[in-house]
Length: 231
Length: 328
Image 1 (cartoon, rainbow over the protein chains, first blue to last red):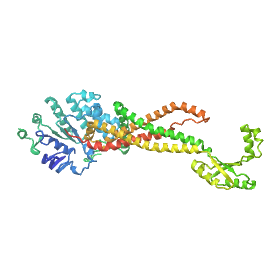
Image 2 (tube, each protein chain N blue to C red):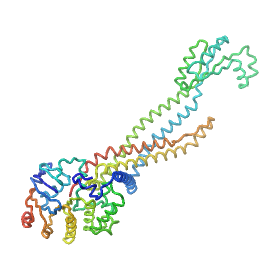
Image 3 (cartoon, chains in turn cyan, yellow):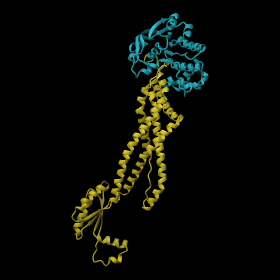
Image 4 (cartoon, rainbow over the protein chains, first blue to last red):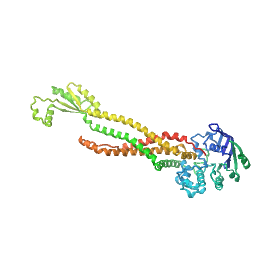
């Protein structure tokens, strides 16, 4: 589903964020992406969502070469990717409903009735159907994160990317969030979660991509390697 | 429509979306954004109100000048029969010769009609009107000349054309001299054309200022909503989708600015119409002040909305391009 082929990224100023990174995330696979701060996790996610372009190498999604996507087409690529952020990036002056409905409104081809149906379904899935009329700041951190997830999945994208989705949450809430990702994964969505929460990874038996200084240090199920990388 | 996934129709919609539904959705989206732009002004009215007030004042000035020019032209038009030309015949012209000249003038293409007043008629009229009736009897002969009143065709009734016609007629050897008493009309015309020129340059300056004011306000509101724009870009909004609310806001600013200008002009007219009526009475004319007609009003609003759109257009594209989302 997502293929990195010898991808390097050097930022203006010479900082080399990624060096010859290659991996293949299969359709319907769920994986963690880990590494120290500055190891290149965010850069890797940005390359998938086209916030950045690689300096060398190629990124493929569903065997489409992203280097052939011009800036006008970028929004349409992003519509196929559900993105979740550490600080959830909700619009403060919009209700939970409006926040979750945003991706549907952008697509501009749904009737208001269908939008309502889908938003409710999405919020129901994350267990926040009773908070439809609330504003984000009236919710707890975990709830806000779940609204962010509801927004990411409301269009039923085939790919979910999460950047430190449990960053500000305690272990119990983190587990709930990860369980939600598992649920989406079980219906065929490819999920890539960037996190440095090793305890969380240790409790799950999922493929873990470990970056170290911009290089792919380890790619596999073995947890110990990951620990070493961060020690 | 998905770029990367052929089987994924418009956001994994299970059933494909028909063209009609698409158009309907787009239209609905437009209306939604159009009203949302109004809602945005409503929610944070202070900066918008200031901008709208400035626009209103800026538009009032050229619109007022326009009203002045319009009324001045009205005055000019109501005096177009003033450009009558009085031709005075030389004394001792034979009747036959005189008739021929009158016929000749009447047939000129510039002339609409002529009215001959013989010296006898003129004397009688003078006797009746002046009250010197008895005194005039002591005159040996009638000192008044024969007069021909020439009314030019409407095309030749304006001061300059009528002036040329007068020169042409004065060249006839039977004519002593002619008189075109429209000097004051000439002056009025000069003043009106001065105001027109001033109107044009003032309007041009104010149009530019309106565009800049709207542009600056929109630029600030884009900066204030940076976060929202980033989120929109992250969830896959096209540039057009992000631009539209700001463009619509510019149009709304223009609309409200135009309404304010219109109200200001109506109030001003109300304020001075009493004085104008008084003045008109003194001149024994039934002149009444003309405000903006429905058509003028529409024109003003279209113009101000167009200016609002132009103002936002010049900043929106560049300003929003600068805002790029950051994943952290």
